[in-house]
Image (cartoon, rainbow, N blue to C red):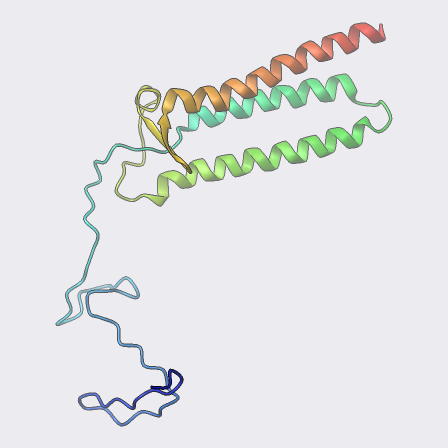
Length: 172
């Protein structure tokens, strides 16, 4: 049978269709849209949602801690290097890259709470640290996620402060 030709199908109470017209027969259990009210004769399939599943999203406090570390790094960089030739361009580029990274991190962290409707949209910071966080490759502990995000950002901030101090002392 040729795969490009379709048999003309006759439905109950319907006129014959052209062979070029696509026929979309959707089972009644699958919704193409969210109905305002139940359609008569159709059994709707809704996912089983408990709303009490343990959340696995990133806590906003981890994002704030990471953002504050990067903000400190940028502040030190602007204070130390502003006004020295092409360093102004480098500072602008570093600020744009950091802003894009933090914006994507914040949007992803906020979206993580809204993507999974079966999870609670909130959890305490203590529950985050003792719980798990779902990441691309699987799950990791909340404490590890916090250390990787906030710890690395603040290590960068401390190193920028030390480096800025050394540069300021060398100029004096």
